Image (cartoon, rainbow over all chains, first blue to last red; front, top):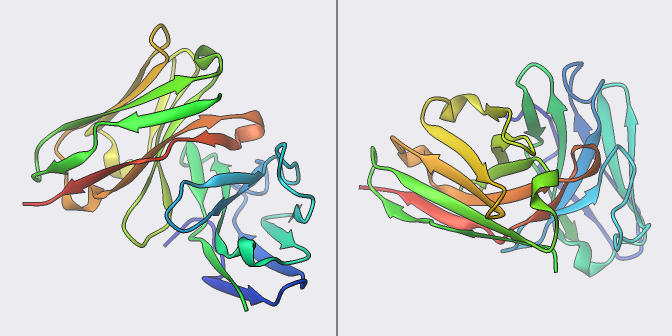
Length: 110
Length: 118
């Protein structure tokens, strides 16, 4: 049972916009910044979003993050087949003194 | 080129020890906090341990407290994870990762596989 709750799966067709939710609590998302990671099959995770909604250099602006209270969302617009991957949210947890991850969402591009 | 390269994984019996290493290059290692994150087969990501830029503080996830020790040698641009009293549930790919801006883990190694089995 992960501290941050994500739907196990999501799907969309090419060109579509999809969102992935991440639900937390007052000890993590409410007061700490959220990051999102993309993990392609057989590879290490890659940082997609940090600081709630900032993109590292090289990450397309098709990826965006939002936070409201104890929940966060990752939106992917103009869905592409290359976006098929596992997506994880994360945030520092003040009660655990460490970061917590969501259980991950497997995105399928139909 | 900014890079992290892990090593030291392998197959080990329950109760034994293993030491993982992570070699950093392409950036000023001593400026960054560093993490170990693991991923059990078919499972999600789990934070294991974090160490501050100067080694002044360390935090561990509850399941490894008292068994694992994170350390670093800034003169050698290296991060370590000493794992003692290993259990089958510790079987995972172990990644080292750099703590970039606002707690985003911006650089990850390729991972090293640890299998604990009798």
